[in-house]
Amino acid sequence: MTLDLSALETSYADFDFGPVDLTVDREVLAVLGPSGSGKSTMLSLVAGITTPDSGSITLDGRELVGRPPEDRNVGIVFQEGALFPHMTARENVAYAGASDDRVTELAAMLELGDVLDRRPPTLSGGERQRVALARTLAADPDALLLDEPLSSLDAPIRRRLRDELHDLFTSLDVPVLYVTHDQRTATALGDRVAIVRDGTIEQVGSPSTVLDRPANRFVARFTGNENLFEGRVVERTADGARVRVGGTTLRAAVSGDAGSDGDESVATGSTVTVSVHPSRVELGAPDGATRTGSDATRAGTDAARANALTGTVARWLHEGTDYRIEVEVGDGIGFTTTVRPPTFDRLGVDRGVELAVSVPPEAVHLIPRSAER
Amino acid sequence: MATRTDHGRMGSVDWLSVALVLGGLLVVYYVAPLASLVLSASPGAVASRLGESSVRSAATTSLLSASITTVVATAFGLPLAYWLARAETRWKTVVLGFVVLPLVLPPTVGGVVLLTVVGPNTLVGDWAAAAGVPLTRSLAGVVLAQTFVASPFVVVTAKAAFESVDETLEYASRSLGKGRWTTARNVTLPLAGPGILAGVTLAFARSIGEFGATMMLSYYPRTMPVEIWVSFVSLGLDAAYPVAILLVVISVAALLVLNTVARNPWR
Image (cartoon, rainbow over all chains, first blue to last red):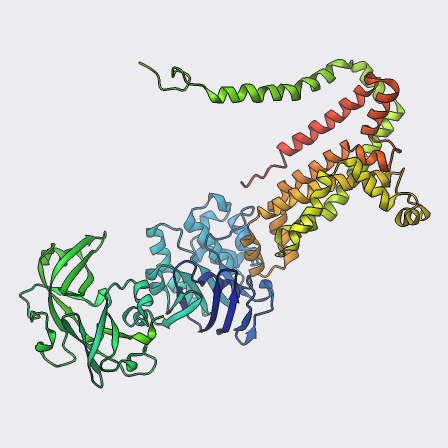
């Protein structure tokens, strides 16, 4: 079962979608993007709610464009559930014609046993979404589309449903398109993540690929990466590069394999965006072994060794479970990272405190100028 | 200690009470004539007048024609209302304009324009008369006049009712394999039902009360409003009271329907 979008385009008065090419196998593809980026339009096109101007959508080789929604066998779970308010939860789930046994089975799977005889307006947000999902699954869809089904829920219930959904989606064995604007949901649920902007796809890849090797600044920012610096490649070797950012030189491991976000087009002398995901920046005590000063090039030429820098804490913020810390390692470079409270306490973080900053070369990702738009 | 209520504050005007006084006068203006009407006719006189064959026949004509009109207006009005609520075309505005026209057109003018199409010596009128269904001075004429004037109520009210049903619900139904018609029957109509019923009730009430266009198209058989007019001009005001009271009772019944079953319980 493969869902295939090909050269898909549609336009509204003030918005152009596409062209989009996308292939979804038996996997969860999380579609991540800001509001108004065309995520929901993509689902509408696949579900048959919107008609494309051009392009094709095939499901298992069957052309969907031109078929009405009822003739596609594509299940869609809407943002607020879109449950039929005049029917009980049970009637909603059974709407597509599922047998009593199937309804009972779905209710057990989604823990709906005690709400089946209630009407949607009396259900909580989480219950509504689970009923909506059960109703869609009861129709045995060949592809499943979900439009931010968790966005209106409180954080605890959202986390719990997120965990449950991942196993459920995997067990379905059909293409799943999961639209969200929340990076955590996207990377937690998606086998792959597609980043959407202005109606087109900026990057598709595994969660770790889009997090660690963003195709451009937009992808980096939208996946929570603030560590983006303007740099110049001073040396390019077979498997690495040295890049000058402000007064600091960083070593970057450059993978040569094709399709790895254009690293191979990074040439000596070119201007690049240096991206380092916050989760890959490590902080340590300043008197540790990594203390080598801000000029990392003197620490050695071994590409496998981490960039060892020293910086001072510019600001920090308590974000509930983590501390977000910005450490300045030289003019123009302020690394942001998050640490857990024990680390925070151990390092005695406060404004102006000196810390060792360690960045592995694999975490230093270079984005060529040509990737920006 | 001054209490912090609007009433207790010195020198301030209680505008809510002013609004009530002004609006209250209007309400009195609505209620007083009705009370006066009921009081001005003795129950005995009303009962005996209602027993007269002319009154009974007028009541029968009115109830029968208004019922037929309501069915016709609903049968043709609901599809139009659904189309107006769901279609995506600029022509909707134009069509809606034509639908609303009979609402703003003076009913007698409505009667005039209808006569130019179905009246004597017109193509349709002669053809229908030849076929044994005269479209003027007949029950069919009454229904035509009432439909022209009353059916827009079904269309306009049902359109609003359909529009109040979230289109996402229809798409949810269709994505579950149900076609447009099944979706309309299972989802849209039940949810729009109370609003549609309000439109149907309004159309019925308007049909019962239709006078202007009916006079032009079908003076006979007399409906209740026509009977009131005839009684008034030939026998005087007193003779018009009983039928008027009957019409008031029917109108109040329609109002009751509007305020009970015709309310949307899911809002």
